[in-house]
Amino acid sequence: VKNILEENGWETDAKFFMKTVGGIGGDSYSITETGEFFIGNKRIGKTFFEDGRGKKLPQLRGRFEISQGYVLPIGTNEKSFDGRYTGVIAEEDIKCKVIPIWTR
Image (cartoon, rainbow, N blue to C red; front, side):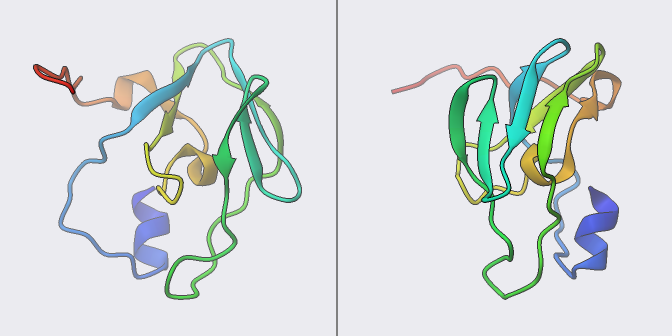
């Protein structure tokens, strides 16, 4: 992810990304040719071809199985830069778990 950010000039001071785990080992996800994004059979959203400044975003297409020991990171905003562009990450690369103490 860091390489993709640097290559596209999406510099950030953030050292970590905070994402929801959208899928775990044994789950599948797919991205159609038109960019529709599904985890299992549930439509999550879509992918975009470029960012708000016109820079091309990475494009994953097809059906993918998540291997054991990996997770699919997903943001809560449809325009989030997350697993729909980068794929899965190893569980061992997760630095911490956020637990909300108050939700509405």
